[in-house]
Amino acid sequence: MAGDLDLLLPRPHHVDINAGAVCLAFLNSTDQPGGFSHSDDLQPGYANMLSWARAAGVISDEETRRLLGLARRNAREASAIRRQILEFRGALYRIVRCGISGEEPDSTDLALFEQEIRNTYAHARLAVNEDDGALTWAWPRDLHLEQPLWKIVRSAGELLFSGQRDRIRECASEDCQRIFLDTTRNRSRQYCSTGGCGNRERVRKFRQNPAAP
Image 1 (tube, rainbow, N blue to C red):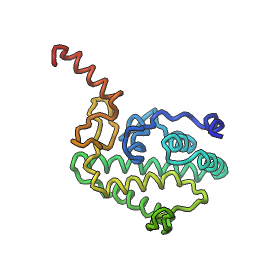
Image 2 (cartoon, one colour):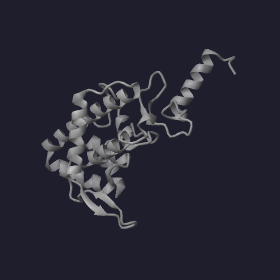
Image 3 (tube, one colour):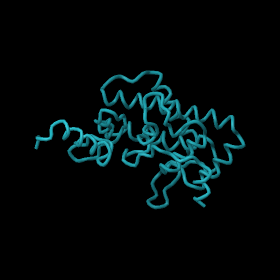
């Protein structure tokens, strides 16, 4: 049951449902995507990372339960994989920020991204989609502690290799670093959320200039 997981796992604080892509929600799993933070849903332990991945829809309740048990039996490996996931988040954030600013990504970050793509698809096998008969990638059903990372890496690859990469934005709020995918028709979205940063910025601007139309 889902209730027992709510008791076993810490509660995540940064589950961004407005990011537009799993990989971008992953970047927003801390309040300081590019640096050190005291509020980070992937730390301090593997259970924290599992809790965020479950809440973000990366893994199911059943997968969460089984991975939690596997991590308890392999604590050292789980800790190493959590560090690997943190390193990937940092590299992906820097790559995405370079894309937004038009700068060249660091070769070290690109190499780490490439390695994670290779690692992820090394577990995949070609399969036939039962609905339309198209070829697709399928991942093993047996457990791997790095399994939550696979969906994130796939999301990042699909987004950054697609025509939507130029729709990736950083929130225009002065005190927010969240990344999101602008899916508006006229590419006009400025804030990570209309009800959060969008409202706060409108209130701030009104207080600065209440006579403005």
